[in-house]
Figure 1: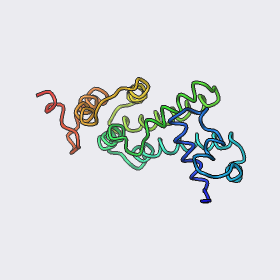
Figure 2: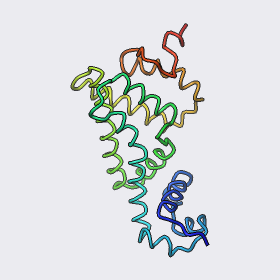
Figure 3: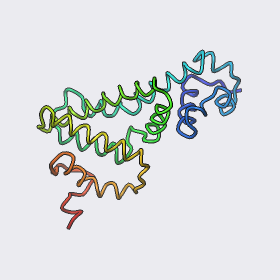
Figure 4: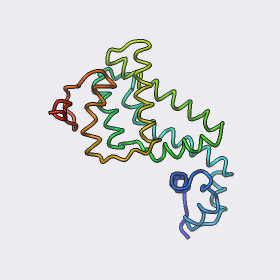
Length: 198
């Protein structure tokens, strides 16, 4: 029998959460998928609740890590930061929309999880606000632009909008113009707004 490590259990739990919701994340189902006894699980996590707590922290880290890097305090070029933010979402780079949707569905069933998700949302909005401040926006305007940008993206996933990646790339300059109030001239994998409307 192959010995499974802590990360194996976490990865299978993540997969089950995404595919079947939090109810699907059971010790028995994970053990069967991994081909091991349940005793191995308890050696790493102690309880299902402990695993779920670790899974929530994993989601926070996996889906916020790239945004933290983009909005790092030592970075001041707002245009580059905003471009990287859009590319992260369009290309699904270092960010899993499926993971985000699964955790939000879990939060709708648990007030405790909802509070923790709101805390993560607040952090992400603060990070995006930093980008807008680096673009030259101040005070309430930077805050509101950050909220609109974030709520727009969360809503995109919540509504299960299906677009091809080329279509998303084509529309990105227009979204940038509307959300950031300007068209960026930096090199990007996306066409310019003028190119998409000509």
